[in-house]
Image (cartoon, rainbow, N blue to C red):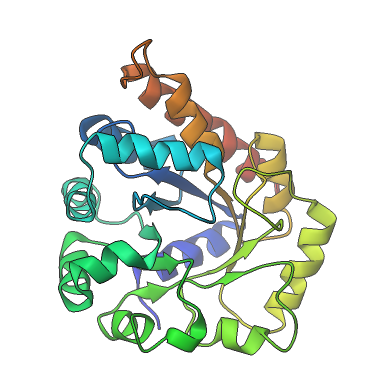
Length: 276
């Protein structure tokens, strides 16, 4: 697959000689309007790719911080349909920044696969990461998504062995998401040396870019990953920045937006310094 926004963004990063910053935020956290303001502000603050978490009641791969972010979004009335509306509103002012939806299959299944893919493409979604749809189920959503021009982004982990790897890279496009630590999001910190070795193993199996996530919270950590990978993915730290900006009643404030965007500036500076 070639010519998607994700492909073009990683090609531009290669031309610049640097890694990218992939920013994960939960759609609708802390509410629709502030979430939209956050997403609109991410590119200008230095995010190269945006991952939007689809709020779900049982996000099994996510740690407490992202779980709570999903709960806040759901309480504010966020749905998958409103997530697509958020993307649509973002696209009114930004036609270039790639947007990936990340989450779980259940909300898409309830929406209806064909209807979801149609609406997602029309809204301006570029790729999907579904943590609970393995390669054995590619006919369910992966292949139909590819048929409509979306990138299907696969996850690899420290426990993905050589026997499993061909199934992981099969039908993957856009970028490969390497989960740098075992366990849930927000747990522990990535080991740059181990990550570097893992990225080299992945690059021997595929020529698509490798982005590394989990365990990256600071500019220094992002810089360490940017030296060995094509992008650093940060999520828990952004969801925590939203939480830190809530008022005493747990409602969103402008501080939620400012906290996320200020952190984006710091992380982007770290990523950009890595190969300077």
